[in-house]
Image (cartoon, rainbow, N blue to C red; front, top):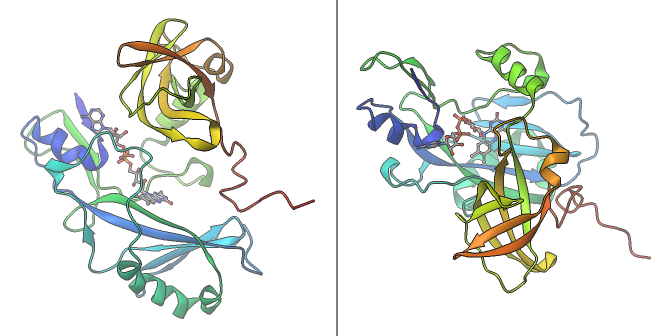
Length: 276
Ligand SMILES: Cc1cc2nc3c(=O)[nH]c(=O)nc-3n(C[C@H](O)[C@H](O)[C@H](O)COP(=O)(O)OP(=O)(O)OC[C@H]3O[C@@H](n4cnc5c(N)ncnc54)[C@H](O)[C@@H]3O)c2cc1C
C-alpha cells in the first residue's frame, strides 16, 4: 500500500505511478500586525468569505490572511524545488492589497496597526478547492491525501481523520528532531544537503544552510534521527559530538534545539530588552 501525502509535490509523486493528482502551487500570503488594544488570546477566528479573508489573534496583534479570487500561481508542478522546507517567497503588497483592503473594511483598527511581518509561502490548490483524500481511481492501494489547504490542530479537540494515529505517534515521541547546527569554524561554508554525523555516525543531512553573522558561523538546519531508529529524546539530541561533512572534510558543530540567535522567540515577537 502507498500513501501519497507529499504536499505540493504530490502531483510528481503520483506521476511516478501514473496516478494523476491535480494540484498547482500558488503563493499564499498573510501579515501579522503589532499589538492592538483589546485584542486577546480568547478572540475567535474570524472568516469573511465575501472579503476572502481570515483573521486571528497572534501575540496580541492580528494575523490577517486570505484566499483571493485571482490567485498568483507559483512554479509549474514539475519544476517545484525540493526540498523547500522553512522557506518563504518574496513580499508582494500589490497582490495582497485586495485582502488587506477588505480586512481594513471589516476591522478599521487594522489601518493604524503597524505590520510586523509579511509572510508568503507556496500552498497547493486543487481545481475545485476541495481536498483530494482517498484511494486513487487509477490504482488500487494507492492513497492520496493532498490539497488540504489547512492542517489539523490536536489542541482544538475537534475530530479529524487520523487523529488517533497522530495522538499515538505523539505519545510515543518523535524519531527525528529539527536542530540548528552552528559550525565552530567560521570559515566553513554550507549550502544545504551536507551529511550530519553525531559521535561519528550519520544521523541526517542539512536541509538548508546559510551564513549566520549574528552567531559567528554558518548555521544549518537538519532533521536528526536516533542511529538505531528509536525515539530521539531532547536530551539525546542535544548530547554527542556533532560534525558536518563539507566537501569531504568533517567540521565540528554545536547543536541547538532552539534557534541560536533568538532561542525564546523574543525578537520575532518584538520583545527587546529596554535600554538601561
Ligand atoms: C504561508 C503559509 C501559511 C500557512 N498557515 C497555516 C495555518 O495557520 N494553519 C494551517 O492549518 N495551515 C496553514 N498553512 C497550510 C499548511 O501548511 C498546509 O496545508 C500543510 O502543511 C499541508 O500538509 P501536507 O502534509 O499535505 O504537506 P506538507 O506539509 O508540504 O508535507 C509534504 C511532505 O512530503 C515530503 N515529500 C515531498 N516529496 C517527497 C518525496 N519524493 N519523497 C519523500 N518525501 C517527499 C516533503 O518534504 C514534505 O515534508 C499555511 C501554508 C502557508 C504556505
